[in-house]
Length: 110
Image 1 (cartoon, rainbow, N blue to C red):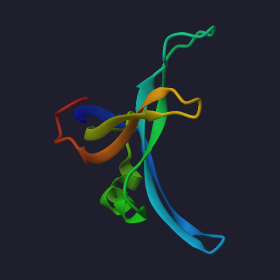
Image 2: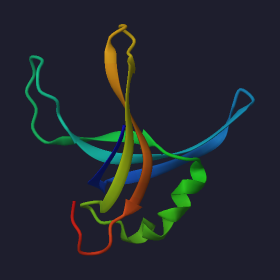
Image 3: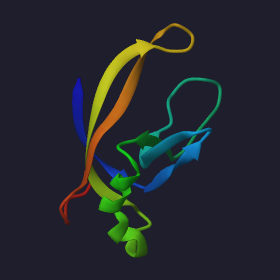
Image 4: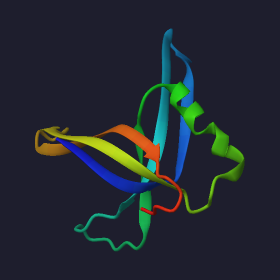
């Protein structure tokens, strides 16, 4: 199931190279998420969650912002694919895959 939303891109990182004879290349986008409820601990605030999309060349679409990246992040439109599969414990669990991310036009907040 595809899901569209607005968010704030807090950062991104391109990685490429070779390890044990295998080449790798990816861009990771960091989007905020609230702490989940439950468990025994307490939490305040938000964290960023890494989502991979494309290869390292995806970073080039954002590189022009390197010297002017706002501390509050960049408002973006995102599209995810949400599926369900088995987790390591054999339970059904959601899997969220980033399939598109674009900056919002100026003046549109998340």
